Length: 337
Image 1 (cartoon, rainbow, N blue to C red):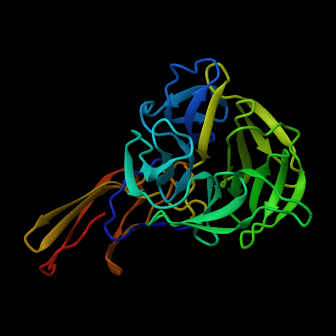
Image 2 (image 1 turned 60 degrees about the vertical axis):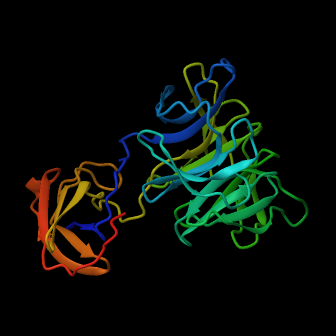
Image 3 (image 1 turned 90 degrees about the vertical axis):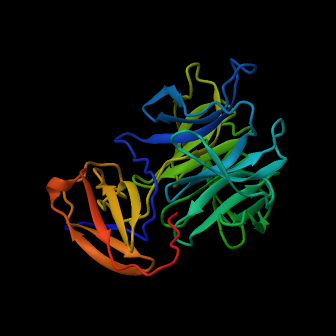
């Protein structure tokens, strides 16, 4: 199939590609074997090598992150005030390369888990206290309560949350069970027992490229996969050098595009020259699922919502630098995010 990669609205961002194995990002808040000198902060590790955890940035003196996840090349995270576990400082983005935090808003109530639903373009979360399903506005930080987690006969206290790419929401509760959750009401339907003690903070996410549900259980510091048809959890292993890293804000990067579509272009720059703009970039080398790109036919360049041109590209230009001059621009200001 022919593939066209779009450079949309001159938006210049850095991309982090998926690896062949499942690369998991999370936020380390504690270590059982090293509670005093633990280096807290954003980390990443591979599902097939859990003992090697790469610290992206030491943020031990900053506020902690419990609720956070990934959407559209960004790590969104609620940060607590330093020294607290539930006093909200604000909603931030966290740079996946160096950990830099950028404040979005100080609005909203504190969440303990987040997940993004690609079918409704909505960020959901669990309110501190494990009782209520919430939505989170990624532009304003405002949170809105949907309803209480409950079955037809009892209340459910939810710890972990994840949306499948098909829009189905799942949660693991304090009773150690996996539930299917109605996103409109928070009503819960029992799927089955995990067979594992779900204790303390929790986080889980789908690898949306494979459909596998991964669960970080801070009750035993282990990573599991969870069968969404039965609820049964299968242990992969302990996380960290000593197998006792306590993690939150777990996610697996995913771009919601057709399988095989090229990833975004890199190193995007624009230089003004009179009434012209010289655009430069580096073509992608991988598709959106992290596999080596084998075919590329063009780069679409937009000015706002207007398609300016499609630059013809041959496959030998994969991973190569290119440029285009956008001419006869009107006087005024153009914002490039």
